Length: 113
Length: 114
Image 1 (cartoon, rainbow over the protein chains, first blue to last red):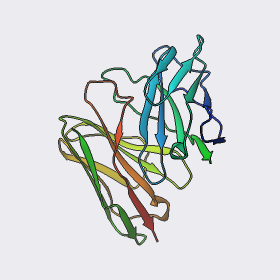
Image 2 (cartoon, rainbow over the protein chains, first blue to last red):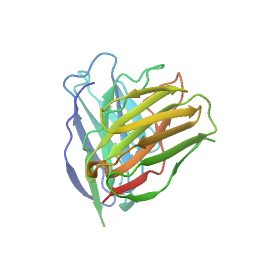
Image 3 (tube, chains in turn green, blue):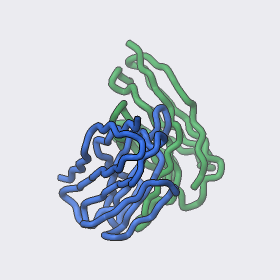
Image 4 (spheres, chains in turn purple, cyan):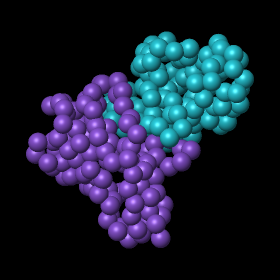
């Protein structure tokens, strides 16, 4: 599974857009990029997944350049409740795969008032 | 709708004592099941995963074991706990045969070994 690198921590203020970038230089052709969110003392929660270009849902957007060696999670207009750890994961999670998610240390996002 | 349960929520156990953590899933059939551990301030570490009853794959050799006696029941056990077993234990499931990047996590068990 491809190794990922993301910032350890980030600070932001309420109402700002937050962009968290993840590097995955060794991403394989069949690999997907997935982001999870974890609040303290809770299990992670799936946010978004993509393969290339841009994916948007009601929570976030995911930007993936053509070479797929990095990806950026964009959170629009964050609030205090978005304070959490955000994990970037890369792997072959195609249909039928057993889905071994490899979590790194993630990025701790602190949203301030 | 699907729900996942874990118990107990918290546990304090002495070194050398046995352990049994239970996880059950409702509202789905033949799920893939996973046990993760998260040490304080760290990311999640996959311990075991199962694609069916009696089918267990171990990711990290250690003094823990897992069993799946029923389709939607996953148990994590130890005969003798170590101090290093302390952590936040999370059970998760994903749909069988479908994209497995979307896993659903339970509320977790916080284990402190003293």
